[in-house]
Length: 395
Ligand SMILES: Cc1cc2nc3c(=O)[nH]c(=O)nc-3n(C[C@H](O)[C@H](O)[C@H](O)COP(=O)(O)O)c2cc1C
Image (tube, rainbow, N blue to C red; front, side, top):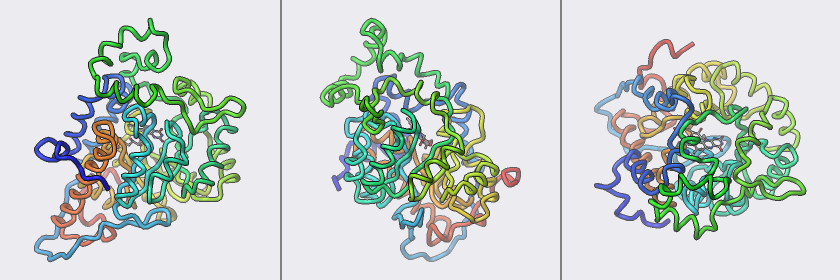
């Protein structure tokens, strides 16, 4: 484990928002806004973290506690810490180490990394970078042939679960991206890129690292039969061509014997359907507010899904987690663990591996402090009696 440099400690970095600011400073606007932004009016993007403020704690004071136990059992594995690193596409564009750094940090923290299909490092190397379990998030980009090859590679490399994302029949309308010329930057002619170049040149640290890494990475894990790895530029169109359905999940179950988690569930009905189709767990998620705008905050959708599942399978959630107390609240409302996306990606974009470790350290310290302040000895002892949440959230 590398020591975290003092530039990532206090007074510079005290919370996740501080890492966000560092990421904003290091990245060109197009890349930062791709990471930071959401769909349309960004209502859901804003509501995801805000909705945690509608949940209020009910502590038990004057409780003498020894060490708090932060462990959680998820998908058959014991995690040292109940926050999993969510799949974040294009991580290698944010930092050359990208997915390798995230996998390594997750392993060092005793938790899971979920690798996105939209990744710039080969999945075998990513698995080898972690000393812990790694999951593979599956899009059918490139068609079933490419997906089957990816699943087979993931199986051989030792991935312990597939995450099947169901909320992306098309990419959401993230309005910051066309304004910043994201498409032109990814694949346009030099003339098309020209208006956006001054902002890139104004971020020399990012640019030097990007060029030293060989420029725009290919999508190493979407290998189209007879063609080779897909170019970055093709992804949005390819997503729309490969909208997934429950039939695809049946097909995947036939070629993958391991666990499957369905990500992007927001209603009790979809949760029941996922279980009927053999999911080992569901992830309540609105894709971090990047897909359908004005869907509920993920934490607000959690109680309905937990009630519908009725203990038949594990429920995870993601969206808006910026503090350890958010993690604790989600677990009180019935999540087994959470996934964090931007919280670690800001750290990754700011400083690679040490930045991710700093993000995870902040969250872990927060969780431990929150448990102590609640008078609760362990993650597994958390339940709804520690919080008050709006009654209309429970269906
Ligand atoms: C930049 C970025 C890229 C993402 N790429 C993917 C992806 O490739 N596949 C996927 O299932 N989810 C993807 N997500 C969604 C995350 O896995 C997760 O659901 C979301 O980030 C959680 O919200 P949070 O960022 O507020 O923690 C992405 C999110 C971000 C911010």
